[in-house]
Image 1 (tube, rainbow, N blue to C red):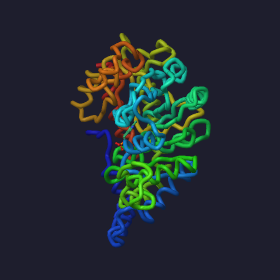
Image 2 (cartoon, protein in one colour; image 1 turned 180 degrees about the horizontal axis):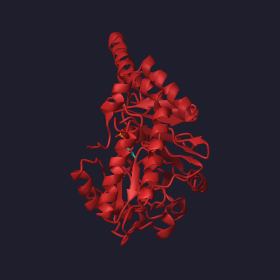
Image 3 (cartoon, protein in one colour; image 1 turned 90 degrees about the horizontal axis):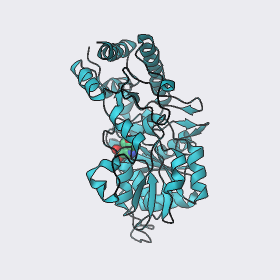
Amino acid sequence: MAVPLLDLKAQYRTIKEEVDAAVIDVLESQYFIMGPKVQALEGEIAAYTNTPHAVGVSSGTDALLISLMAEGIGPEDEVITTPYSFFATAGCITRVCAKPVFVDIDPVDFNIDPANIQAAVTGKTKAVIPIHLYGQMADMDGVMEAAKGHNLSVIEDGAQAIGCEYKGRRAGSIGDYGCFSFFPSKNLGGAGDGGIVTVSDEKRHETLSIMRVHGGRPKYYHRMIGGNFRLDAIQAAILSVKLKKLDAWTDARQKNADLYRGMLRDSGIVVEASELDPKTLDMKGRSGVSLPKSFDDRRHIYNQFVLRTDRRDEMRAFLKERGIGNEVYYPVPFHKQDCFQYLGYQPGDFPVSEIAAEQTIAVPIYPELTEAQIKEVVEAIVAFHKG
Ligand SMILES: *Cc1c(COP(=O)(O)O)cnc(C)c1O
């Protein structure tokens, strides 16, 4: 039995009637740009993330870009983030002509290690972008404290993290901006590209709203330069339907994670984090897999379920052969990318990120996964490590 990494058709089957009706509603109205559907979704996402405002935008990438633009970040400015994320995080910093400054991650949650921020701050640093990778939030107390000490703006990259919590606070509600993606494979995905920015501050909310429509307000009168960063009404209508299911889907993802943990531990191939070097969680020379940690005071929404293993590439090939979907999220950290060589970093500069890039592998975790399918995945993982 093959198990895909993600099965969007299985999800669509459970919501087809409502989604189809929502799309037809928009078609009947012929109201495609902005309007009531976009406004409704913005209100719903603001409420869901416990943030005063949300501004629908064209993608998660554009959510980051428009936030940097709204913050006035540009040439001569530096923005701190990690080298271990989807390309957009660092790409957007360079697109506003600022300089990305990388700091290494914490090996446990794969997110920015706040202890590294201080040393990276210069007189030019304007902002920090913590990423809530794989569906678990960064240590936001540490990030906010470091940011406050240096008067930095905080832009949360929550593209994989809608619904996550840190000490009872939702992703997007702690920093100055919360950036989310509705790319179809994310935990809340549309039928194409889309994104949203959550924001608490009134002035920033107004700037985002104006920049989303080329910076014109009133129309055709420009005090600032923005872009076409609009979210389509059809996407908003679909997302409003899907948002109502999100908590049930999150429950299912968490249940799947628990099943994986139980079955993998029972199989005897799990290497506990306590047996590894706490600074890196390096699996080198160890057989088996180590499990992702979910902190008690954070709500992990399992956008991905990511294992560590020393024989990652072999394990990938083995799972593929058996029809088990898997993915390596981010085999090349940013400081090793050709396009960022001009920044002057060297291999070895960010060892925790480099080890994560070499040793992690994501396996299927989507909500519609059955227990039998999880068993199938576990059997394949165990066969690889014991076989
Ligand atoms: C998906 C993703 C983005 C970009 O979102 P798009 O909607 O694909 O543009 C940015 N950052 C992270 C961490 C992501 O996972």
